[in-house]
Length: 90
Length: 422
Image (cartoon, rainbow over all chains, first blue to last red; front, side):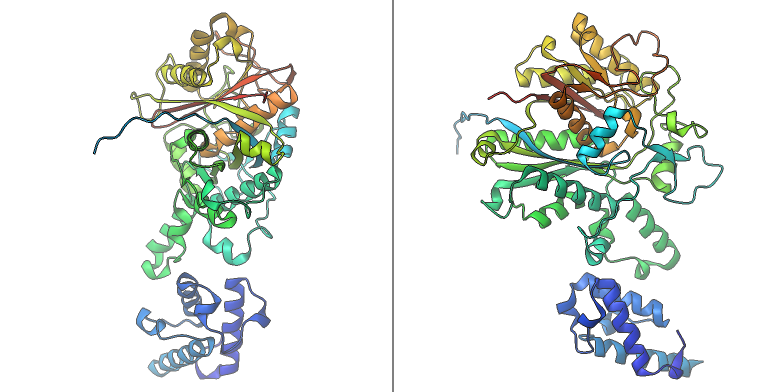
C-alpha cells in the first residue's frame, strides 16, 4: 500500500471494505461505506479489524480513538487523518 | 434445614449417534473401516516446519479436513483447530443420530467435550505475537480459542444445547470422564440427550517439543509408520495424534420414543486416581485394575462377561506393562479368553480425544463382531501372552466391551459398553 497523500480516499475505502469483507467472511457487496461495525459483528470482531487496519495502512489507532469509529466511513476518515499526520511528521 | 436422602431410579443410557475425525478417517464409519483394515495414520509432521535436530519429527495428523462449509470464515477466526474438530465430530454425530435438536426442551440437551490441552496452537501463536509486538498485537479471539472448554461452548451454541454443559481436562482420560459425566447426567434424569466426547489438536511446536522433553514420545523418526507398537518389546513411547470423537448419549426411553437406531448401551463407568506419580502408573497398574473393577461393578457384570478390552495401550514401556499386569490379575483365567487390542497402534495417541475415538472402536467392535487389531505387534514383550489381535482384526461374537483411558495426573477411567438388549 502506498503511503500518505498519494493514496486517495477512494483507495483507502476500497481497501477497508475488502478487509472488512475478508475478516468477517462476507461478500464484498454486503459491506458498504455506511455499514456499522456493531451490526457487522461483535466487539471482538471490531477490535481485530482495527488491528488489520493498523497493519494494512501502517498506522497506530489508540483504543480511545477506535471507540469513536461507528461506520466504515468513520474508519476511512480516521485512517486518512493518521496517514496524513504520519506524512507530515516525515 | 435438614434434607432427607432421596431414592432415584437410574435410567438406561444408549449410544444413538457417533462422529469422528481421525488421522485414519474423516468420519466415524471411515475411521472404523480403517481400523478393521489395520491402517496406520502416523507419519512425518507436515503441519509445521520441523527443526531437523528435533528428537521427534512425526505424529498422527488429521489431513485434508476442511472446516468449511460447516464453519464459515468468521467463525473459524473464533475457534482453535481443536474446537473446530470438536464441532466437526459433533455435527456428524448429530446427523447420524437423526435427532433434531431444534425439537424438545433445550434444557434437556447437554454437551461435555473434554480436551487434554485445549487450544494449545492458539496459545503458542498468541504468545509468539505477544513477545514480538506486545498486547496490541494479540488477537482478541485468543481467549475464546484457547480455553479447554471452547469445544463444548462452540458445540452448545451450534445446537442450542442449554442443559448440562462442561468440559473435563484430565489429560488422556478427558474423553472418558466426559462420557462418564454425560452418562451420569442422563442416568440421574438431569438431561435426555448429551453430546459427549473429546477433541485434541496439539500437533504444534509447543506440544511436540514439551512432550519430547519429558521423553514420553517415540523417537523412531526413521520408521514413523511402525513406531506405534503397543505391547511390542520394541515400543519406545507414544505418538502424539490429532483427533476428535463425539457420541450421542441418550435416555433409552427417549431413544425408543423417537425410533432411534441404538448402537450399544453404556452400562458402566469406573474411575479412580493413582495418588502415586504425576506421569507414571505404578508397576502393577493398580489404577487400571480399580477403574475396570468399578466399571464392572457399576455395570453389575462379572469379569467373565467381558469379551473385549480396548486398551489404553499407548506404546510406552511402563504404561503397557502396568495395564497388561492389571488385566491379568483382574481377569485371571478369563484374561486368556477375552481379547484386548490397542487401536492406538493405528491412530497414535489422541490424548483427550482418545477415549472418544476408542469408545467408537469398542462400540463398533460389539456391533460388527470384529476386534480391531493391534498393528505393528511383531514380538510381544515378555509375559505379554494375551490375545492382542496382533496385526489383523479378528471376527468373534461379543456382548461386552471395556474401554480404558488413563491420564497423566493419575486419572483412570474404564467405560463399559454392551450390545443393546431391550
